Length: 51
Image (cartoon, rainbow, N blue to C red):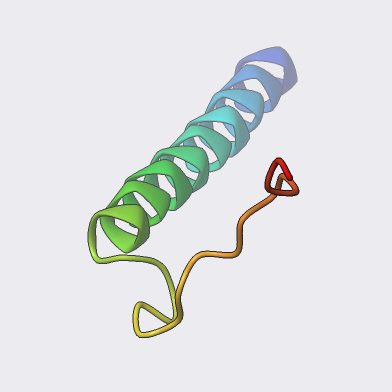
């Protein structure tokens, strides 16, 4: 009986962790689609322009 309860507890913890990961992934995609946390800011060029 203890073995079954232990496996159930492990399964529930893994399920909860997977749900949290999925929520984070969906939230990140939604944030990117909306333009990030501050969409009014211009993007900063990462390379120096050629002279």
